[in-house]
Length: 490
Image (cartoon, rainbow, N blue to C red; front, top):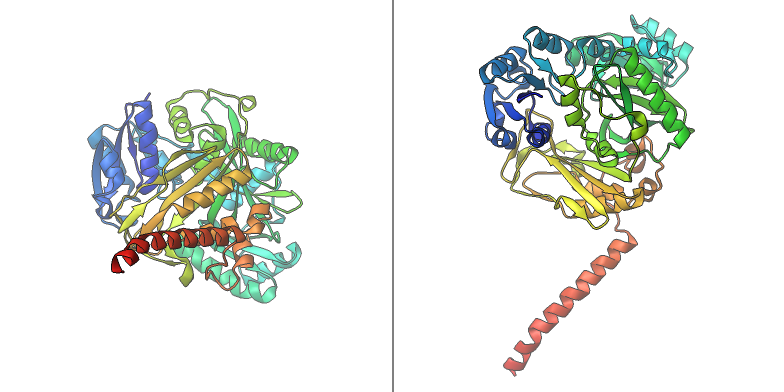
């Protein structure tokens, strides 16, 4: 096994990887930028290496500096986390050339799945259901209008190299295509340096469901069931859960089998995620494959008991998977809420600044439930303008969905942050909504339920009872305190 691993990332995912490495007896090196010099990850790692200025382009995205840090510390492997260089095939190749192990899939798989047009071709060849559309590059607006008319409105105009919710536009008619095509192409060029565009059918009232896969270097691939990620804002996931309230056993097995088939088609050899768009009728179509660890991986770990980071490390070292598909099963239900530094009362505007107070709920057992909080910050730390505004990922597990939701509601109430805006009130409101509790989800959920933005919600009957009980208790205490004083005054 590796004796030392370098983590080419920051924040909560760096801390998450350090924890698993500690348990495995592996020393860790963390690289850090100017903005992260006093970070929790730097404090926890066995060694740390400064790699440049706060902007990622000066630090976390510079492969030369990562390689130099490996050389200086003797790190044998690099775990890229997610984001930054995690899906960069060139970086994976560079490490291989340097004799350093990349803890992720082989470069060929990254290249095949990183291009959305090519990935759809692979999926079709592997027998995976794909969204109806034009699997090929769109040349210009007239070509886009022709293809959109053939596919049938509404359609999605998408950047081939897109990701993270960028480079996507829904077109309901020809005017939307005429306006949307150049806009998406410009955004794709600016964000990814690649302006190739394709068009596919837009599934109305869709659900976003993804399958976690795990492969080794010996041809073995399994899936670890699904995650539902339908609660999104501007194509960014906000709340995730595992399993999905939509799927039955037959649909789950079919989706899992297709995800495994695609992974095998590209010789996939690490943790990865095959994403699908699903209809309310349980129909499903391939969207893309993310060739890295997902932000929402904790919910999969909670229902399967599998440490995905550990498996990535073991696979990268050359070990065979220690289990087969038949050894895996779903135990209970898990939900993750992304705690962001943003003000839900002001259109979710980013809210950078210092965490004057940071008091998360206690992790571990909470009655029949469990609480997990993946974070890379402490009280007094600053949320920087240079990186993603996520503060932490709060996850709860329960024996069933109802108990997992209830545990999340309580955990959010026990999570106290001061000094900047944060979205905990919004997340708590969603947990209390009848529609969410019923599992009637779609990627339109936030737009449907909060069409005019979030302005708080009316308390539920249970919350009213709690407030009334608290008011009565306070009144009794105040009355008891004042009674002796009245006697002395007489």
